[in-house]
Image: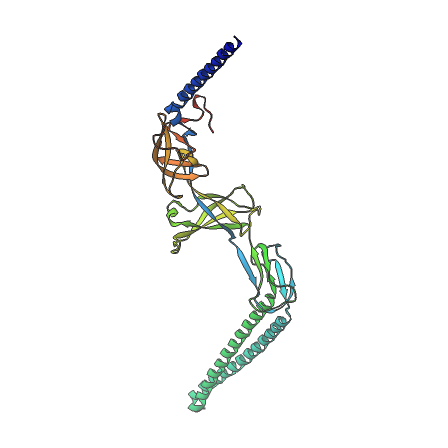
Length: 388
């Protein structure tokens, strides 16, 4: 009796396990047999936006001073004083240094004495010329009365001419002596080296006691209050550049701080080796935050486009970095549709789409390898789904 009950219990357990396995298998088949759920792809997509778009041309280059002066000696000699060091601010006409003036003072005194000698010679020549003219007048009177021969009269005329020539020579010698005095006076004054312009001392080449030759460089002065940015642009960018256009730039020194400048000069020749053109942009620097030699990176504002249609940068598919055409995926009727677009410009994380899209379009902003043309998609966040 007990044996029969045990057999019945085992049979019931086996039947229950078989029934449960059958039900579980049917549920798995039903879940896996949904082709729509397996084919649908959840995507991150966003609608296109309209707003103002700044059309610009990127620039980069080094800042340089519009006033860089190399101060050189006009005369040679021993440098007795050098008053400024590197980094010092120099005003126009400040005394920078002095050269020993002893030899130049002697030359000046000698030139002064030479003028005295030349002027004395001129005075003597003028006296001789006056005497010669009087003798000529007397000879003229004697010739009319027959009291002098023709030969003596010619001698008197020759004397006048010789005296006039001596006066001319003496006048030239006076002029020469005065010119020599001016040269000596300038050389004596050039022993004092003054600043031709305002600026900071970038470099001092010699110290006190150095023996210098004429034309030796003493200082280099840089005026950082008047700077310009020199950069090269591809020649195809030239059509949009105009004199006076505003530009904005940053430097690694000041991080995100933005500085402003304007286009001041365009080189008239395109360089043949790289097909680029040199552009200069001027800026004010009253506070002295910028320095010559700093690297700068920014953009020239060409114009502002109102109501531009834009999409995130990640939504764009391009074959080349500088290309003006590309593609995007648009969600239409629950499917991904690939569209060709024309690009107006790229700024940071946004792209201006000039053609190919319209208001209301929803573009996929994260494009993965599984996204294909015509694939069924669902935008993340719709119908309770959560985007990744």
